[in-house]
Length: 221
Ligand code: 21W
Image (cartoon, rainbow, N blue to C red; front, side, top):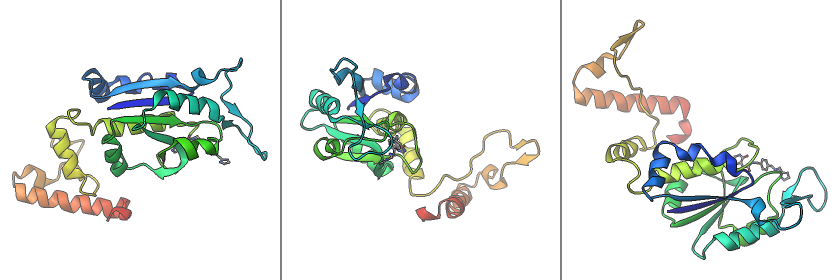
């Protein structure tokens, strides 16, 4: 899969995507990731990317011309173009699976007070938010989405991690887990987990997952 990112803060992307599983996916050629500076597509003397909103009001908007030029340069007809903004539909695992089926993704990270509406109208196939909180720009959301999508690409995770995913993602939160020692600072591991009784362990875990989900995330039940 190829993912292009258009951002005013390309330096933010160095680090998070150069570690661990994403790093391996890139080295293996499963993920072909390219970060592009929106400012490179502004051609006036001051490389202007933003301007004041018609009608007045606070803040600045990203101008359409640099974004249109960048998308026309970077995207093929089949590229899925995704705007990142707090006004998007909220990203989740189902959307991650959907995006993982694309060959070509272009993520456009916003800033300031947002995008000129014509970018939405003419360029975007989709608009995504990562949740109901306010960030300074869309760079971290872009990285969150790249991470969630990349780990779903065939060959990125080992069979064991993929299988673990399947069993957890039955719509419930994870059950409590313990490793050695069996007693730590007086805190004991539940007896059933030491029993060797696999049917009893499975039953306990299912109960715990349900209980925890009911307490913390009743919306999932
Ligand atoms: C924050 C952009 C606030 C716009 C109309 C008039 C991308 C994000 C972002 C940002 C505003 C995501 C307004 C979760 C996020 C992002 C920067 C609001 C106010 N509208 N997911 N005035 N949270 N944030 N504009 O912040 O670009 S995905």
